Image 1 (cartoon, rainbow, N blue to C red):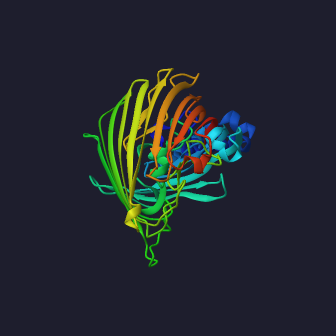
Image 2: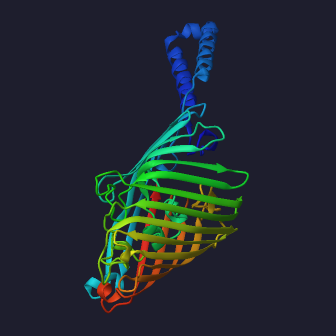
Length: 446
């Protein structure tokens, strides 16, 4: 959240505007109220009025008047002392997809396409002393509460506590906001492993000198096929932790290492068959499916863990993750393990650098010129959801270009090439084993 020491040029001070309006109104009224003879012969009343205006301005200076910013189309109000604030804003993402082959296997592999709002989100957030809050709503598929967070930051030298519907600390790419991700869709690994926002409570802390950060939390279940309750109708919980280290975290130069783990009580519910899309939305086939050619099965627990790496050197960046999901089934004969990875390399033609945040994620850069910023990238992604008799493995290669007109407006174009293999391929996509897709996005933040 930006505060008054970082306001843009069109920030307006209520105090200043009230002062100017007051001076103007009083002085104008005084001029019309005084007879011409007095104006001509005696200036003492005018001097008295000037003094009254000066006294009123001093009183206004003593008030703790807020500042208003409308930068980027949103609204932000901050108290004079910076202890209280309120902000409204949001994002709009419009996507176009065209795809064929395995992505559209249910329609004979022919080219399918769609135009749709990927995210239509609005938020309100604010702070009062050591507390802050944020409510994020999404309207792309009907009204939905995406985030509802209350946070306490009053422990000096201690952790920050947050509760509500909050993001679990799983996967660097899953934790990076959708408005800042490099590709239009996140990797199969992130979409398989992360439940994104769940109700729970968490604590985290960042140590600036060492670059260490930890986060731990407990959350209500209800992801990956679980209902959030066990067979006795008791609340089923998930426990997640993440540790990151950034020994180098300078402007234009970053080195990041991360490790996360999650234990998830599935309550005896069946694990959802469809792990992830092939990094393209609105297709009729999800390429990563552990039950293809076989059956789903009931699960007691999931154990998930992952490794993260990222590096930035000027306009060049590299990001990679590897993750494993171990399944403890109700019937031990179904116990299994699945894994995946991705590697993304990007380069800013116009010289910008990816911006690293202390919570171990990236945000979008500020263009160096009014002509905007250009980024090109490539990603290799894999997820293996196969066992001896069922399931599929998907590989997706993506190349893309991003144009940042400014901090608020961004255009993206991706071309994807996918392959599917494994014992469940025939059951899932028939005779197709590959597909291509073109995805486009226009994004505006307000």
